[in-house]
Length: 302
Image: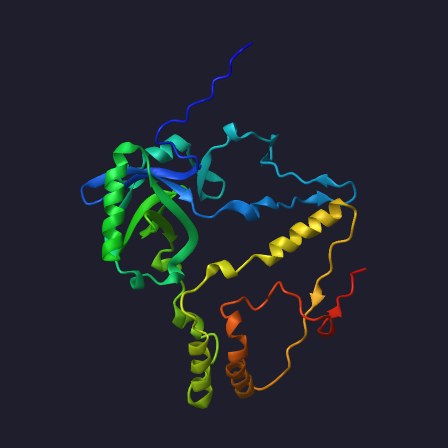
């Protein structure tokens, strides 16, 4: 009988798939790191495909050459169109060769205070940086500890997803994280958007009431755990129902809000705060159903 030997896990290898690998540099110090996507992919469990309605066959997308039809990836190169129908051609190796070792690394150019980076510059991609290899552990730990003690974040650039991008490195609970940033030139200025409407001066009693409401609803430390993806749960429930041949559960219709003037709305909001103190920081749409008497059933679509 053959004996199966368990494969040994390579030392220093992460169990997570790296989205990017390279060097992290600050001053004359450099060490290898891996970027692990900070977003857990639970919501990626649900994928919808396009189907051809008459026969329920799945719709596929193919890379088509007008002369030869569908082509495989190994026959595809990249080309820049400098005039109509004329291209400068590149293969992947040529483009990679244009990058220096410094450009392949994430080099911290400056350390900044957290309040110097406005959230509007974050493009939504967040990663954990972990040391790659035992030799990287000490400088990694040293940088993380120094940044945490000084309450500073690092800003630099790296070639990521095929182009040079701006990145922010910050400490978080013993780890370094990397957040991708938009360049300043990519962000519309507030004044540009403000010109699209006529702004009303915020003064007087209405402003005082609004300030009182905001101050009262400030409930100390913010708890992200109170927010759940209720819509995702409803989709999963609908899928399970349809798998059993049942109709998808119908949502209950919410009451239309009473139309009142701004002053009265502010006064009521402040007055109701005391009775709803236990529900601070809660999303406007709660998963808890209201009493039956306050609901109307939604008509099913034909």
